[in-house]
Length: 465
Ligand code: FAD
Image (cartoon, rainbow, N blue to C red; front, side, top):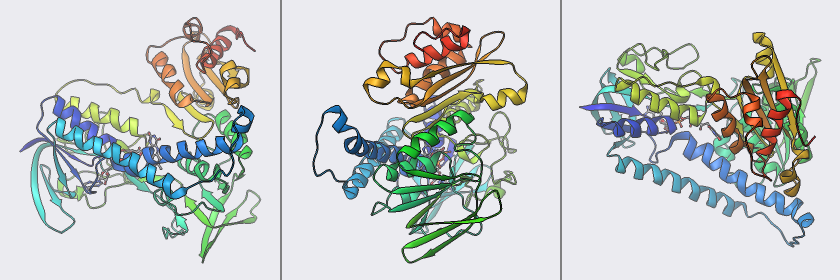
């Protein structure tokens, strides 16, 4: 009998397993695929960032090296090699999880995990053989899968999801992206930088619509520069595929039908929680109408010894959110009292410029009736950004009008994915804008833009604009 069985080895599941083992619990992990690491390591965060990095190198070589005084001739993309390097990066990471499981003495069971009852999990291997394992506690970490619209048939050839987009054999001439959210814009950028025409069709009136609206507007301007075109406020009504041509039909706000033709269409309208094959009913675990495993504030299901974490429960579908929840549940099982501040989970879009945010957006503050002040600093005014020719974007700080406490930080610009960590720390310690404004930031760094935006929010005291 295990103390804990974790079903699913994504960032939620494998981190939960490690923390359980660290706390001295006898732990097993069940994973249906041959490699560990889940969506994030195999077909999500890691491979997409590998391709984003490669395509960024190419784009810089093609478009800005000459200005730097570096001359190249015969520059070409070797897509096969690019994808092979990406695969190698994935392997290094998934092998790393194998090592961590061994190091922490966690038993790995390969096969589909399904509930027999509330303490028994049947593990069915690909060859059909099955065995039962028992656990006092069970953590469901089965993640998510790409979702689609009922009238779209994903053929995985021309009409594809993020998974296939990470493994294309050719650079699309024209990639049509349905959905202007994080995944569509990141993968659109990969191919856009290498010469594909990219058309993004988005139902809402802004890109990355859940983020602060300034970010969507700024990102749209930057992506236009690399050849993206946008159809905002367009509702996709049909996707047709004939030979090598795909046609996406969408209705604009006037009710007219617009047709966009390309050679590939990426359907990136979001992800759905995944519980197929889990047989949750056998344990009596409740699934919501939206397909999520229902949990309380302790991430406990309606069955007290069964917990659920990550993409399969409510909240942001992010790897680091899943990881925090993995640690939280392990410590909860041991009777500790952990805490997650969901408002301070940062969100990042790895386009160029990168977008990163934490805390409230301006729209949310208005909706809540909280009085706030705004401080902005454009990267155009940053010496570091000018040195690297990365001057698109800005940092925007929202602080409480009376107390000066930082309530939200929204950044678009170079390396903001890393810069946002400073804002998270500041906000966890409930810093005021002036606190940050009075701290020394190394010169010249991009981080000075955050300090300057804080100075601007404090008392309109930015020094370099
Ligand atoms: P998952 O990673 O989905 O893992 C679930 C695992 O459970 C899978 O391995 C699955 O095979 C296994 N499983 C399911 N059912 C069973 C069963 N019955 N038995 C056994 N095993 C089972 N997030 C970020 O934070 N940053 C990013 O940059 C980022 N980029 C992304 C890019 C792309 C293209 C995509 C698709 C996603 C990206 N995400 C990113 C989201 C991130 O991948 C997810 O939020 C994260 O993987 C969720 O972790 P999880 O542990 O909940 O589930």
